[in-house]
Amino acid sequence: MIAERKDDHVRFATEQHRRRSGHNQFDDVSFVHHALSGIDRSDVSLATRFGGIEWQVPLYINAMTGGSPKTGAINRDLAIAARETGVSIATGSVSPYFADESVADTFSVMRKENPDGFILANINANATVEMARRAVGLLRADALQIHVNAVQETVMPEGDRSFASWGPRIERIAAGVDVPVIVKEVGFGLSRETLLRLQEMGVRAADVAGSGGTNFARIENDRRDRPDYSYLDGWGQSTPACLLDAQGVGIPVLASGGIRHPLDAARALALGASAVGASGLFLRTVLDGGVAALVSLLSSWTDQLEALMTVLGASTPADLTRCDVLVHGDLRAFCADRGIGTRRLATRSLSYGTDFHHTNHETIGGTR
Picture 1 (cartoon, rainbow, N blue to C red):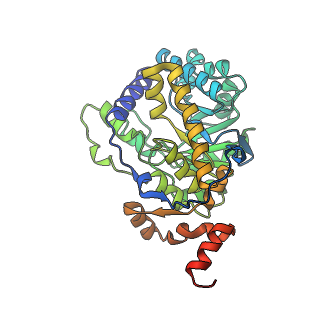
Picture 2: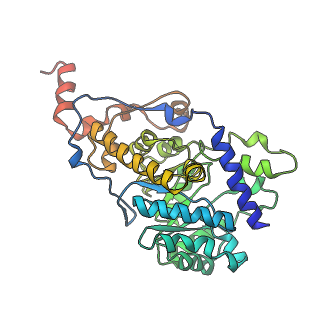
Picture 3: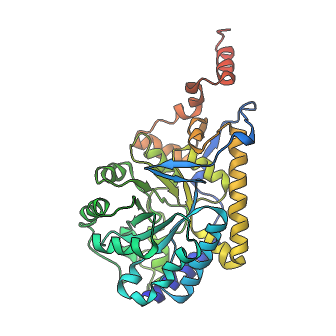
C-alpha cells in the first residue's frame, strides 16, 4: 500500500506540473535595475553558508520519493544528476523503510550513486530519535529533514490525525542526532511564528516550502474516492510571502515551492533565503528526458544564476539581500496585513554605501 501511494504521488505531481499555469507570487517581486551595478563574472562565487553548513551552489534537489522499485529508479537518476552538478539533494520520506526494510535500497541508492555529495535524509514529525538515527545511517546523511505536513495528512485518506506531539518530537530529534536538523513544510509555508518556535527547539534551519509548487492537498484529494477537500487548493502562504514574513528571524531559511527558473531563485535569495530548492520541475525533467536532461537543466540554472548575480552586483548569494527589490500586488497586500514593511526593500542598497548609489541619491536629493 505504501509503495502504491508513493507511485501515486509521483504520477499526480507530474500531472500537476504539466498543466500548471505560469503565474505565482514570485511575479510580485522585481529587482530595481541599476545599470552601473554590474561586477566582473570572475568575482562571483555561488558558495552559500547557513547553520554551520556550506554548499558550493545555493541550489538543491528537494525531497521527492522512494519506497518502490519505480521511485528507487527515480532516486538513482536524481542522485546521479546531483553528483554531476554539485548540487545538494534530499531523499523523500524514508517512512516506507521503517515499515519494510526491504525497500532500503530505493533510498540508499542515492548514496551509492553520489558517494561524496551532500545528502539530506527525510522523516516525518512522528518519528522517534531512534528512527531519525536510522534514517541518517541509511543514507550516511549529512543533514536530516523533518517534514511537517498537517494539511496533507488531513486530506490523505490514510493520513495521521494527531499533531500535538510534533513539536516535542522535533525538539528531541534536534538534540538527539549528530547532524544538522532542517524542518520543512510540503507546500503550505512556514509562518514567522512557526520559525520562532523552531529556533527555540534547536532546529538548525527551516525550509519554508510555500505554496506555488506541488500541491499535496490536491494530490491527496485526487487519491480520494470523492474530491471532498477541493476547497483547500489555495491553503497556506506562498514562498515569497514566507520569506518576507521571516525577515529578522534568527533561524536561517531555505526556499522551495514555486521555483520555476533562475530568476525565481535570485528573487528568493534576495528575500533572505540561504539556498533554493525545487522538486516538481526536476522530477518532470528527469522523467521526460532522463539524467542528461536534468544535468543540463541544473547546469543551466547554475550558469544563469551566476550571470544574474553579475548584473545585480552580488558577489555572493548573501549579497543579493543588498539589492533593491519591489513588492507588488497580492504579496504587498499580505505584507501590509502582517505588518511587514516593504518600502525599505526598494532602497536598501543605499545602506551599503556603494559609490554609484550614493552619487545618484545625493544628486537627486539636491545635495551636490
